[in-house]
Length: 275
Image (cartoon, rainbow, N blue to C red; front, top):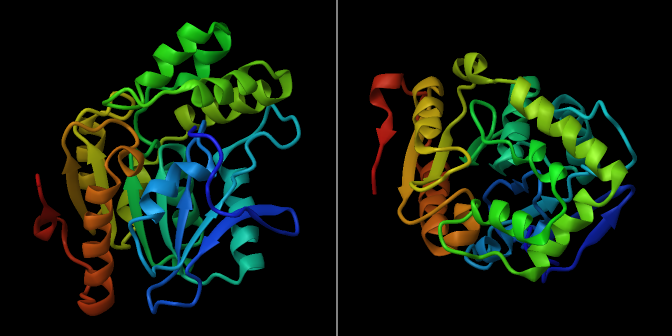
């Protein structure tokens, strides 16, 4: 949700994506994955802060076709094909909400293909899943109120409401939405997290009402190589709400990975910061 991206949408085969700063940095490509009601534009504020880092943002095909069986695993297979077509090797995956869930499942399925992870407001453990509540009402005020829970400050505008209305007013899109909402609820990754040794940065809003702070703690405790950073006065979409602070944490993480490569750390050595 956030309207159209200011960056040019490119197409390759059946894939749509944004690509910036390709080949200008030695850093691995950052691949950003949006959430269930998300769009490519969700990452515009963050891209603006990241300088020469190579970035790719694919449009996840949540509403292509009509399926009551859409799952995270199907999206993982789609994402694997996307990376192969784009010739992207060992990317750094950044996922928000359902996008984090997808990043985790991809890492579990294709561990050696992933450099590291950044998760923010990720589903996969516990989430207030609005995919079940939006369809019951097509009232703009109701949708506005639900969408506002995403953010600490009120960032919901008419474009966001229009985008959600477009989904809930379409039977085929709603069928897909209900399917993926059900799967994100049922597919709990918590018991698999110890199998992910990759360096992982968790960036969480202290005021997240969709994946509350206790969810970040649970990710942190189960992921063996995780760091946790908090952003005050911030909800479920830190990269949109506080892009400068988010970029600061992200850049520190990238520098650490590029110049201070270390062996995998044990859980008691984790970097746990409240700043």
